[in-house]
Image (cartoon, rainbow, N blue to C red; front, side, top):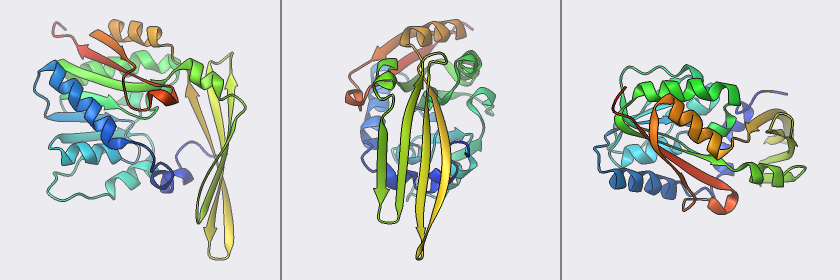
Length: 245
């Protein structure tokens, strides 16, 4: 079974047309306004196919976007928007993030942090603290552990006219993680091709995330439940990079 976001990358946008991307962008901008600082250069880490990267670019931000999947980045870089400075796309794992300078804020959307193993989180937050400017913001969403447990054993179906994706969710209490085994059937002429992927997401406890962020040098950490897709088990965490060190 292949790793996550190989064959699925080509179909991802067509299978996620129900995602309220503009609402996510509004949420981030509301956080910027509430903070009162100047936000011009942003990092979208674990950016996937870059839909939010391009939306924020269209809203006037200078965008840097990073993801470890070359296939997802291929989809992201192939998008275009008029009168927009193209984002800079980087193929990097979150725990190996390495930018040329600082950004005013970093955000991560749609389970990106859930894909990061528990043991890698301290290094990810350390690197984000390094590359977010003093008094800048870090905002990301996660699914609650309760939501992950609620879908254990469920089977899901996504389809278009020429593609069918079947996936099953299996929660591992010992590892505190959920594994999605995916079978992807795509139509090629009169024939269908079958491909497989395995996705593993980790159930991060919000209080544990707060503690790790504090250890990395972030402060004013808030758990936000008034947010997009909260009815689907999603919460957002917003933190401010301290100005001391």
